[in-house]
Length: 137
Image 1 (tube, rainbow, N blue to C red):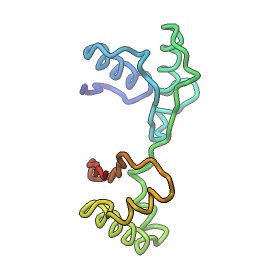
Image 2: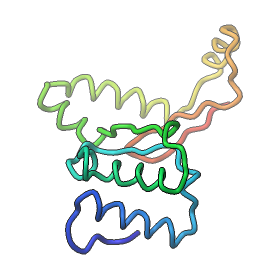
Image 3: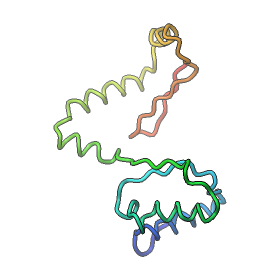
């Protein structure tokens, strides 16, 4: 982790990320996905972080066509739920997900999936706010 000492414009953010990855000796060719939050410093057409990153990769001779850029909006979901009056829905989803986390998939769920001829080697349920994964066989 590194701190940005002056501004948080796209170029400064890119320099910070580049220095961290250089210090950790991580190759840029391993990059496959960029997740951003639609902040102006990330997505400006001429000076955003993504523009600087993609042009740097092209300068290194790395193809940028296979790199996926995703918009990450998880931090805004609770604000939207309150503003759009979705609290009842959010409460319902939280209860169901917490139920699954505490018990995992039941035997009857696995049996149903076998009937449906699904590959049920390992299912991973990721609860985003808890950063935990529940494995069910």
